Image (cartoon, rainbow, N blue to C red; front, side, top):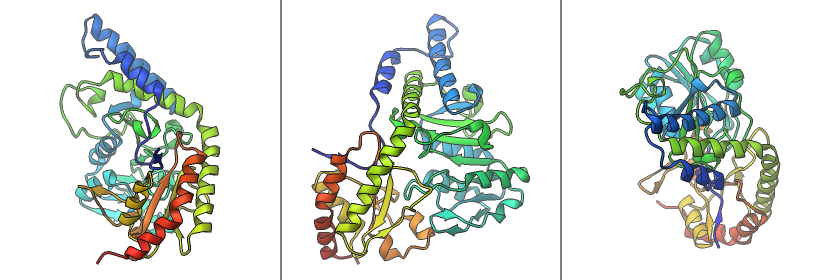
Amino acid sequence: MRHFLDHAATSPMRQVAVDAWVEHSGLLNPGGQYTSGRAARRVLDDARELIAALLDADPVEVIFTASGTEANNLAVSGFAGGRVVASPLEHPSVLEPVKASGAVEWLPVAGARVGDLSALDQPASLATCMWANNETGALQPVDEVVARAQAVGTPVHIDAVQVVGHLPVSFRSSGATTLAASAHKFGGPRSGGLLLARRSPAPAPVLHGGGQERGIRPGTIDVATAAATAAALEEAVGEMDAEATRLAGLRDRLRDGILARVDDVVVHTPPEGVLPGHLHLSFPGAEGDSLIMLLDAAGIDASTGSACASGVNRASHVLLAMGVEEQVVRGAVRFTLGRTSTDADVDAVLAVIGDVVARARLAGMAG
């Protein structure tokens, strides 16, 4: 029996999403003017309207994409054309297009969050800050980011991939210009993403084609994925409050149990102002690769929390930006809980974590 504790990376697809996808998988092009096209369009419109209602947005502001990564890229690349103010704690799907944009001013980091926001007091082509960090779970001061940027007319993009479906979201009152979400983070299909985009200013197109999705993301829309995304989001929002309480309890028990069983642990997830299911910590003297391989052998799915390319784990840019020493960063492990998580998953980790860390420390650090 395996124990999945990597919900920040992906979450198992909800049955309501599977059912919605299967039900609508035979639908044809929603752009067709004939009967079958109009039938597909009705399902697509229903999905768009439901998502808009759940996220307090106007239906025209809901843009369907293929992933949260695509949504982030469309927003950043669609606005970046001059000075960009960004957080160094961002996900690579924001960091990389920001870096490619040219003139970037990085917000300073204080602990697990961005600190001094005075760089936002001068106009820029874009300001971007994630709502919650995908590694530490720390909520960022997005309200202040938006307020300061708005005061000087700077558009703001919010990466809300870790938040949508887990915390209440009102696009209408957020003040953000664009906001990104990813369906598989809340139990939808892995081929579904969302970009909420105001009518004005709107990001310039990165792709060009038939003008679908207001021309921001042209191409024939996958109606089944849109319907499955809406179904998953509706169920996630409906159970959100109860799940937040339940997951926070599991997370706290996991953290306290690890600290009671292992010496010299560095906890990177702040005690307050965090997502309920995140726990990111380091075991100095052990390599993250060794830790996750030993956990894997024990039937536990966890991650280092860092970006993974070609199967090679890299030192977390988030922890480095937070000022954590590299030797400590290299021993990081992220446990993230979700709707399928149970006490049995926590018990499984606590049963082996002492031995796993001891063995990883015995193996030592590479290089």
